[in-house]
Length: 183
Image (tube, rainbow, N blue to C red; front, side, top):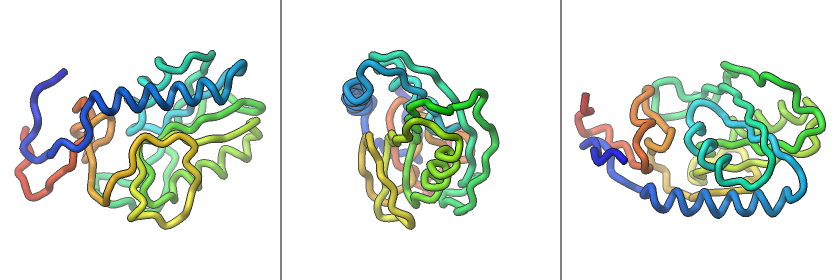
């Protein structure tokens, strides 16, 4: 576990708290889908760490799919425009899908994805989100498996980034743009 904390990042949720919550969510998914298989659909890039940890903790047959989506660019606020950058590799018709998302803030991306995926005729579509930022919600969405609710701050680490940086931090931290970025 890297010990380095960049000066522009203030730790918010420890790696230990994240691991415990991921295990709780995985146990809930295991119970909910007992006797069935599940397709975990990781929304790239931010959810890849969460999806990997969640996948290893679920005690069911799973298949992984990845969907590339972009709505932030290199800014700290969502553009509101959802761009699919990478599509699924296999059909999901008749499958139980769990969309694995890093953060739900405006609700626009997950709402768009849920509607798009329903058009592919899965048996069910549920959402697992590591984080929810209700202060920024523009479209209410149902989150079936939620890790943590946070205030309206810009978080990085555990897969979440700012301009493709900080994804490798093992914890979640608040980015303070007034601090100089470390190189």
